[in-house]
Image 1 (tube, rainbow, N blue to C red):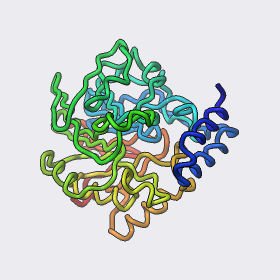
Image 2: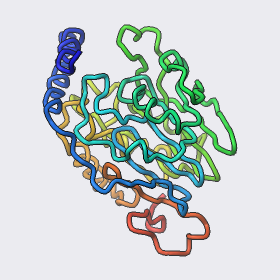
Image 3: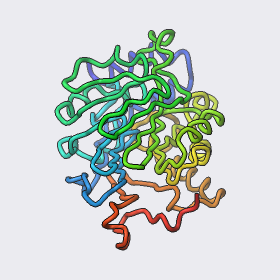
Image 4: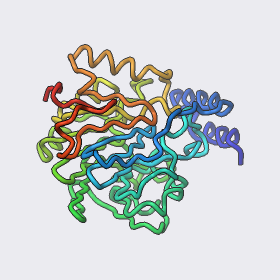
Amino acid sequence: MGRARYLLLAFSLLGASSCAVSGILTRNLSPLFETPREVKNKVREPFRPEARLAVLWVGHATALVQIGDKVILTDPVFTSTVGMVSKRFVEPGLDPENLPPVDAVLISHMHFDHLSLGSLEMIEDKTKVAFVPRGGLVYVPPFRFETVELGPWQTWERGGLKVTPTPVVHSGFRYGIDRDWMTETFTGYVVEYDGIRVYFGGDTAYDKDMFRETGKRFPGIDVALLPIAPIAPRDFMVSKHVDPTEAVQIYQDLGARWMVPIHYDTFVNSLDERGDDLRVLRKVMADRKLTQNEVQILAHGEQRVFLRRPAQEGSKPAQGEAQPQSLRR
């Protein structure tokens, strides 16, 4: 079945129930006839021997996180479409064949733009273990890598690497008909290794108490990977997705050192125009007097070293490297 027929099917199932859904599906027609924007000068060797902490934004909710000698990949999506409906308008910022061995894959929830089975097939031979939220194993076939299902605050540890799911506010169904029983299959994560803590928010709405509790349980988070979109239509999105203002508030609730915005300008999943989400984020940063060293905006395919290994700490920051001395806690 072609993409156009999938769109028509989606309209028949969802369009009548929501003007917002119909509008979003309509906007997905345009990218079907476009070539995804090329990401130039892609990193071919993303493992950085000098890095104690580095992040490469692949696009959407996919990020390659390096903590020392460990590599973590969040919500890997390398396919040209998700759900055979939404086509990406920017190609992946990293080619899967250039991935180093991945110590942990984090799956935040079951939606097609976060759990991409085709993408997991592409990286099957490079993945050691993948994590899914409670109830998520039902949608993951038996790959050659280990898949572990975890509930909130349940910590997995191996070789000094710790992975802990944390509560978020979202939905976990995959097909709609499973809405009533897939009620726990969404999560955030905190990853810990060698004294470094990284938070990955997946998709979420805002809940002050929830994120402050995460920050309390995991003080000193170094980097928070946080979604800043979709924004519009706000009355439709607010129960499941934060906007840039709420994302910045989560960053501050967590008490994180750096924020890296994700989940924007890759697929059509809202009524936002391309560039809207970053424009709003930069205004929020200005209003709250946050610097570019605190909120680290990465382009598709851009990799940034946040912390170097001790032997390198006395040297000057490399190009594109975060400068901790200019940050405010």
